[in-house]
Length: 246
Image 1: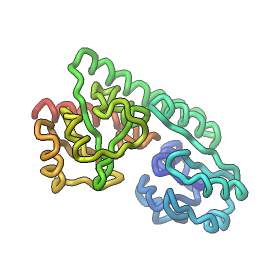
Image 2 (image 1 turned 135 degrees about the vertical axis):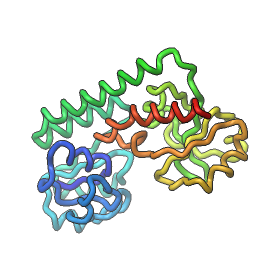
Image 3 (image 1 turned 120 degrees about the horizontal axis):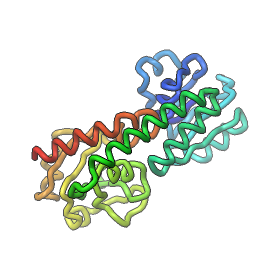
Image 4 (image 1 turned 30 degrees about the vertical axis):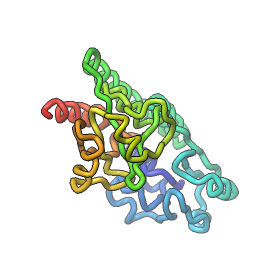
């Protein structure tokens, strides 16, 4: 099979597959070593259909948001394509179980999904009663880009007692500097991906939100909707501790 989605590539590995996966994208950095041992078929937005054809897969796993529709349609002439759509944590659990059934790892997928659900249940119980923080989660710079209410990132944050400051927005809205400042978030989270925010950007953001606490965060636990969600509750616990320490 070929996987065109980094988070789902990692999921396949955590379901116990290896030799069965023959192709992946250059952004599939987990598990370590796979992108050196397996055929790279391009990026998530520029899949090399010819390379996929050469691999003769019996299944291609794609995603509605991360992959390009025209490329997915071209791949359907080569092999069955399973296109996932993951708007929230519950959707991620359904996706995990569905993929597990497709690749003959249903029991492993059920165990993994149950563990993710248990982690978020524990997180929700701990966050209950806490004063929610309004956070602006940034994924891009020039222009500033954040996440809307209908994204898995917003759902992950919400389950950890962190409200989305960009309430009412959908998908991935861009913000002018004035719009950024008007949101007046309590916290600004600078994700490590897809834009590689780093320490050099903190002062720039602080100038637009002078009262906000600005934190750099690893984007994977918040946005990777496969087995990496196992790490999301601990990442949110750590974030709340850092914010409380101020």
